[in-house]
Image (cartoon, rainbow, N blue to C red):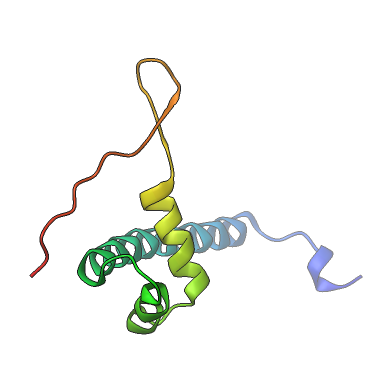
Amino acid sequence: MNAWSQPKPFNEVCSGAGGRRRYNALRRDLKLFRRRDVLDLVLKYKHKRGVQARIATVLGVSESTVRRDISATLYAPNLCRECGGYKPRQFQFKKVS
């Protein structure tokens, strides 16, 4: 049998789970900060042709990541707390200096 199928001690299993939990929490937090930065740059550069590529270059991520972040924050609908239906997100553009 190979070592992968051998049972591991419980404390080693818990240690691995804790490490994964910490790593995933870090990635989730970094995603939230990146999305905030993407929105700030969209407000700064305006949402026009070539902006997603420019933002991707500035932040050092792929254009697909920027596209997903914009879709998740600007275009995704909210659920209405009263009726449970979808409603468009309400946001205001703030002046970025």
